[in-house]
Structures are given as C-alpha cells and as structure tokens.
Amino acid sequence: MRTLLARGLAVALGAVLVSAPARAQDPPKPRRGDQTKITRADLDVAGSAVVTAYDAVRLLRPRWLQPPIGKAASSNMLTPGGGNTSIVVYIDDIRQPDVETSLNRVKASDVVEMKYLDQNKAVEDYGPGHEAGVIEVKTTHR
Image 1 (cartoon, one colour):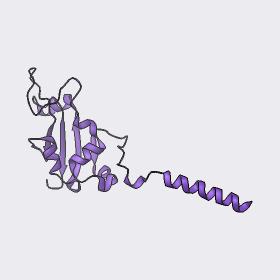
Image 2 (spheres, rainbow, N blue to C red):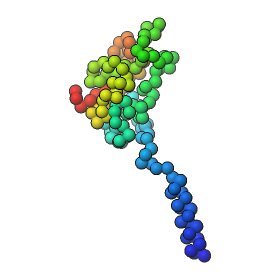
Image 3 (cartoon, one colour):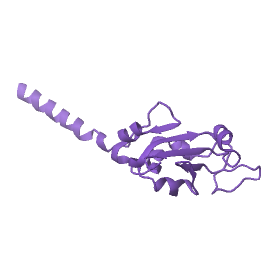
C-alpha cells in the first residue's frame, strides 16, 4: 500500500514539474518604483534579456514609446496644431534623429540611467517640438 501511495505521489509531482513554466526564460517584469527612470540596477536585474537601450525601454517601460493621449504617432512630423508627435531622444545631452535607431545604437552595458519626461515637463525643459515627451539617456561615455 505504501509503495502504491509513493508511486502516486511521484507521478503527481512529476506532472506538476513538467507543466511548470521555466522561470529563467521569462522576460523581466517592470518594477513598480519610479516609472520615469531606468537605473543601472534595473538593467542589472533584467540581465541578458536587455542588450540595447531600446530593449530596456521596450521591456521595462514600454509606455515611454507610446505617444501621449490625443497624439497620433508619426515620424517627426509637426501636427497642424504645432506639436511634435514623436518622442525625442537625447543621448548624453545630444538630440538624436530617431527613437528606435538611436536607442538601438546604445549598448545597455553603457547606460548609467535613462529618464522619461512627459509632454509637460519635456516642453518646460526643452521647449516647443517636444510635445510627445523626451527620453534622456546618460551613458558611461559622457
């Protein structure tokens, strides 16, 4: 009887282990802390899932890549109302021409910190043309 019970438990345990998802391959979950920053610590936790600065934003703060509510996405075109509908990227205080291309050129290992400025803060700090927000990237190459 004990042997039968032991076999039943072993089979049940094996079924649970086989059906359990592999946690090591799951993408990193965004932290609930400051949603306007990606720190070096965030990147270290994300590990090998994050190769470029674009990967970091896409996986850890995907909201940064979406246009503000009421703004349609376009490629750096000015809207009839006068506001830029594309997020502007600054890498080490230098304005970049394109979000995805620019962020993909920066290795995650070179990033010290990334910061997102919403449309109000971006226009306040950088002026007109930044109505869709700003992503600031500080690297070790400063």
